Image 1 (cartoon, each protein chain N blue to C red):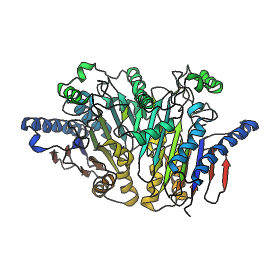
Image 2: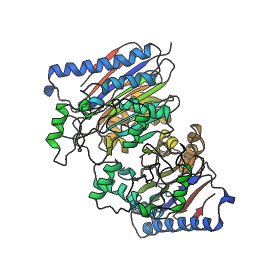
Image 3: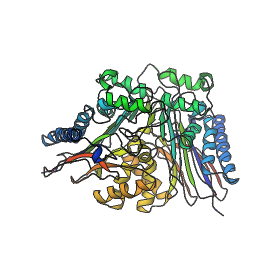
Image 4: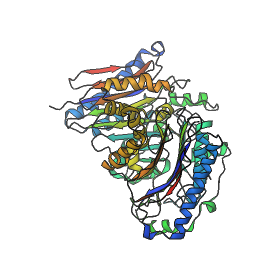
Amino acid sequence: MQKISLAIHGGAGTIIKNKMNPSLEKKYLKGLKDAVNEGYKLLKSGSSSTDAVQSAVENLENNPLFNAGKGAVFSANGKHEMDAAIMEGKSLNAGGVCGVSSVKNPISLARLVMDKSEHVLLSGKGAEDFASLMNCKTENEKYFYDEFRHDQWQRIKDTDKFQLDHSPKKTDKFGTVGAVALDSFGNLAAATSTGGMTNKKFGRVGDSPIIGAGNYANNKTCAISCTGSGEFFLRGVVAYDVSCLMEMRGLSLEAACKEVIQKRIKLIGGDGGLIAVDNKGNIAMPFNTEGMYRASIDFTGKEIIEIY
Amino acid sequence: MQKISLAIHGGAGTIIKNKMNPSLEKKYLKGLKDAVNEGYKLLKSGSSSTDAVQSAVENLENNPLFNAGKGAVFSANGKHEMDAAIMEGKSLNAGGVCGVSSVKNPISLARLVMDKSEHVLLSGKGAEDFASLMNCKTENEKYFYDEFRHDQWQRIKDTDKFQLDHSPKKTDKFGTVGAVALDSFGNLAAATSTGGMTNKKFGRVGDSPIIGAGNYANNKTCAISCTGSGEFFLRGVVAYDVSCLMEMRGLSLEAACKEVIQKRIKLIGGDGGLIAVDNKGNIAMPFNTEGMYRASIDFTGKEIIEIY
């Protein structure tokens, strides 16, 4: 029988254990468990990896603990500017959106871009127009309002500082969610979604919605979703870098991931991590930060849910 | 003495010889000659490859014959939505913009993103706000108005058809400009700029402003600027693909370019071409379409200006 595997992440960075409230930690672990199980249940029942990664990411987008969808941070203009991408390893079809404000689940809009448009990446108001044409579910500002996120923004909004999710230093915490899966047909898929950076200005776009940078899937190699200092992941073309090391140098998934996260991205100053699954169902979840919210269930049914 | 080399392109596609008016062909050839010489003059006088590629692309952006800057095509909303990116091979620093409407030279704004912001990619109104903060030169709609481009748009604006630059079929002609260079310090750089597709909708973004897809530079390997069916170039991560084949498989520039343009991108249905220069000053300008507006001057001073 074809092996199935799924992994998810909820962001990487400095997650200092003694600053983490035990009841909050419990909530994070439950959120990860729920999302990974939702995706895995689909895989087990014969759904495609594309459906599984979309479903797992929607679950994380609906959880206010994670910086994506409902939990998206505030941009400098007091709005939410969300990005997402999805890719299928069999066809190399892909879809992405950047700078959307009202779409409940940006990953579902990325899926519609892949399935229903001739395009790969739609941006801003144009992407919202496409969402409206597709009857994609939207929410008002109240839905995306969260007191904690609003306080984060208020603390820094009149400064020039950017803030990546929870923490004052840009290297401290990266807010992105993602999922990668191998399905029972042997097809890989990857999905990534983010609310960006607190107090983000100038329509900044990070690596999350960019095919090859924050998200990539190819049946020849692996499926990857990244989380980290987006600018460095863009310059390092990180997700495709892992795939190329496997395809062109013959590295294993684990060796390719280690090379990229512990060496190549660090050389240019990048912090973060990624989740990956290869076409044999192996899973890797490397990071070069203090922690990464992550969970996986492999083909043996073994479940991992970890933060540090 | 360190070798210097520069290559430029003005788009690829079906450029049918007998449909080309001889006086128009002369204008295209002159436009290419002017731009390649402007960039090369800078390299020869000791300027950086970054300055040379920016200058050559600005020259092409100011020429209404090419779909970038002044010659940008009309989007579905009757405006111009331009994209550009620039990257330096030494530092792997990069900057890009997408969906800007009023900036005279989008490549100069991409340069400012690289040099003056902490970001790599800015989009839409936010990118325009950054342009304004940087005192980047803007122009009004009259500057970008061109009767030929307007007629192209009028002919299809009430249909759902997209049109890539001059021609009715999306595979016929791709409108992008770009430059790649090796300077006397041994540093590579790449720059790419586009006006997108006629009657473009939904804030579509192609490969041009995306690092790794339409534009890439790395002193370890080469500098690349692409032109073609943007969606396929995004999915193929084409520019970085060439670099990886050189770095990880040890292919020559020519062999890597051939592999990507004649095989890998065609496998997923992509049409187009690219220009590339490696860290030894070798130049490659492959395309899988009937023509590509292109020019180069290599380290021997040999000038090539060709369309078919």
